[in-house]
Length: 622
Ligand code: ADP
Ligand code: MG
Ligand code: ZN
Image (cartoon, rainbow, N blue to C red):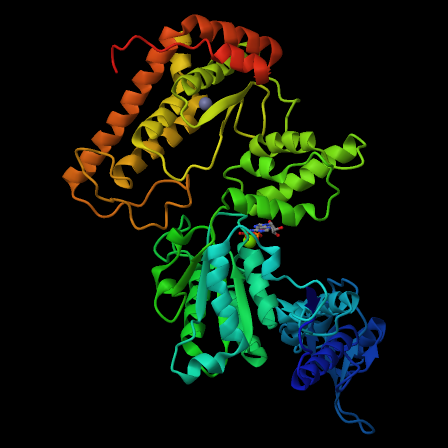
C-alpha cells in the first residue's frame, strides 16, 4: 500500500503564501535599514551639534538614548530643519550647555517609530526561522505538510491500486469480524444498491479487541478490498499542543474525505480522544473535549447518501469511550476482533511464515497448540523471533526447536541474565514457583506443568511456572476454575509455609485469582447464594480478559456485600486447598526447591518424574 502525498494546496493559498513571504522580507529590510523607506533625517556629527548650540542656531532638542534630534532655526536661505546626530558620546555637560544657551530640551519619548521597531523585533525573528525551516524542508510555504499548516490534518492517505495492497487474505483467525466487514466493503463498492431500497448505510464502525489482534490490519484490508481511499490517523495525533488545533484537524480531515468519497476514515486508538468526558486523570482536558465534540459534530453532519464516507475506528478500551460516541448515527456498529483460536492461530502462522524458510520438521499446528492466548501480532513476532534464532545458529532453515525457544521468549519476555537476585530473594522465588507447580500438578485438569524457572525474565516476573493447557478451553467448569485459583495462590502459600511471611512478589497472582473468583460470581453465576445472575455490565469487558476491574451492574448495597463475601469465600477456600496440598507435600517442596536453586530451570522428563510424586492431602477440609 503506497502512501501518497496529499493534494496540492489550492491556488489561493499559494498566493497568500507569496504575499506572506514578501511582507516578511519587507519587514526584515525595514528593521535593519530603518531609513530606507520613508523620510530620512540628515545626520550630523556630535561636535557639529554642540557647535551649533553655541552659535545659538538650535531651538529645540530631544535627547534620545543613542541619538539626539534637534531643530535648527530658520535662516535666510533655509527653512527650519530637523537634524539628528550620529550616535552620541555620554556627555554629562550637555544639559548645562543647553541651559546656558536657552535651548528648550526634553528627553525623547520612546522613539517615534519605537512601537513599530519593537513589534518587528518580535515578529521578524520567528518569521525568519519559519522561512528557513520551510526552505530546508523543501516543501514550499504552507504546503500541506508545512509548518504553517499546523491545523492541517496529518492523516496518511493510502490509495488502492498499488502493488502491495492489503486484503482480507492477509488477515486470519478473525473470521467473524471479517464477515461483518465484508458488508462494509459492499457499502463502499455500490452504495446505491443499499440506498435505493432505503437501507441506511452505517456511518461508523468500531473495531473492538485486545491489542495486536489485527484491528489496524482489518481496516486497511477493508480499504484494499473496496478499492477506496483510506485516510488513517491515530487518536493520539489529534491531541495537539494548541487548544483548538485538534478540532481544526478533525474538520479538515472530514473536508478532505468528503472530496474523495467514497472513502474510509480510520481513527486508530479512538480512546485517546474519545475518553469519557467525565473521567480521566487530568480532569477536564479542554483540548481533547473540543476534539471529541468536533468529531461528534462531523459525524452527525454528513448526511447519508451525500457522500459515502465510512468512519472506522479501533480501540482496545471500549469501556472508557464516551457513550456519546456509541449513539445511533455515530459508531453504532461494533465489530469484535478477538484473539484467535487454535485453527486461527495456525492460519496466522501460515500467513507469516510465507516469508521465512521453514525446515521439514516444522509443524505449525503443533506450534499453534502451544500458543493459546497469543494474538496475531504475537504470532507474527514469534515467527520472526524463530527466524532470528535460526539465523543466529547459522541454520539454513527455521527448525521446530527454534519455534520452541521463540515461544518461551515471547511468553515470558526475553531472558535477562544480567539481572541478579540475591540469595535470599532467589530462595523465596524458588519456593514460590515450586508452590505454583505442586498445586498445579495436584489439581491439574487441563494442562500440565511444563517448566519451572527462576531465571528472571521481562520486567515483572522474577521466575515463572509454565503450565500449558493441552487444548483451547472455552468451557471450564467450576471445579477447574477453583483449581486454577488454587494454583495461582500456590506461590504465596508456599512462602507462608516456609517463611511465615509473604513478599510483594505475589501481588499479580492475587489480582488474577481475585478476578477469576469475581468472574465466577458475577458473570458465570456459580455462586449458590447469588444464583445465576449476571452482575457484570454487559459483555464488553469480558473478552478483554485480565483488563482490570469488571464494571458491575448497579446493585444494591446488600448485593454488593454478598458478592464480596462470595468472592472472598472462593479465594479463601482455594487458599486453604493450596496450603493443604503443600503441607502434605512439604518434603517434595523442599526437594524440588533445592534442585531448582541449583539448576535454575527444571523441565521435561526430570520435572515430570518429580511431580508424579505429589500426593493428595488427607481429606480434612475437602
Ligand atoms: P491492532 O491494531 O489490533 O493492535 P495490528 O493490526 O496493528 O493490531 O497488528 C499488528 C500486526 O500483527 C499486523 O501488522 C500483522 O502483521 C499481525 N497480525 C495481527 N493480527 C493478525 C491477524 N489476525 N492475521 C494476520 N496477521 C495479524
Ligand atoms: Mg492498531
Ligand atoms: Zn506467582
